[in-house]
Image (cartoon, rainbow, N blue to C red; front, side, top):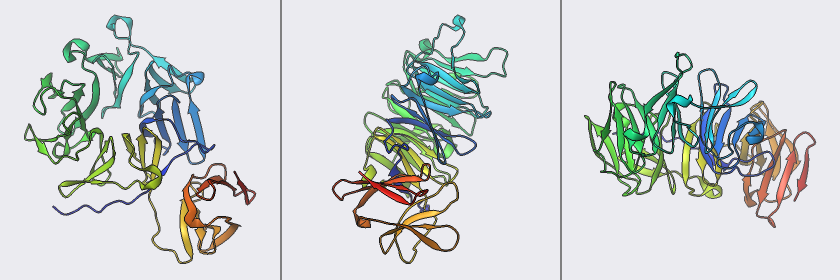
Length: 386
């Protein structure tokens, strides 16, 4: 098989305007406007759009700040599953959603939240209950699988395949399979081991299941699970890139499948090889990664080599200006054809170990020079050190 062209990102830990790392980022979703929503473990929901930033917590109406999963429906409403229940963002604020009492399923500890192809929301708890919510139906709530059927196995992942079938994985109890008519317990891939399945929206020819115990990976071929090259790491999440390449998030970084093998993605020295929870391939070409150490963003460079420029920092999301460091060690901005020097840089550019994006015309640089942090305010063209 021909090798797929590899996308190259520049990865940075994504920080709040105050320069703080986010808490563990469990799940990420992009809305129709390009805004990024992040379910964090302990800090509620984070929202980023250009220079706008919001943090929603229990003080804003969330049922809990320990968020595991997040989705956006076709109406643009954001759903979040927390350790204390399910919520949806309305114009009036966050509203907690609870199934009717007759279903006897409180859904008070959410582990999975997915928007299916028909725009119905699926939600699963820690007891093996899987419900759907379709507000166009006379009775919006419907039980898909309940604890008795799943034997209490927590549902960890779901894959909706283009042939109309659906697969879900159960904690330590292998797979459940929907063939278009009925659900059945499928024990073909790895006995009763725990699995992760994906990608979330999958083609028949690229559906894989990863064993979280012995690290084996399986592919579905003609209805049978057969061995697939393993990446020798515990797989937490599986995704498909816009170009069709398989990615897995593991307990030791991100791997990309190419030409029969898994290649470790270089996330850079600042990020390292953290444990990965999830991905979001964004519409602007960037790659967002949720890790146990916080949120990571992969920036897609749109330049090759620029004479006289020693380092490119980032692109201004508002006016698309490029901000960098020139060979004379000054901060420069390109708007249009030429570069304009806006401020000298008091430290060698080779000593820079990290930088933030642009928020309210400010950004921060961390240097090895005595552990200094430099704040740049492009409105005032000034530098504050600390």
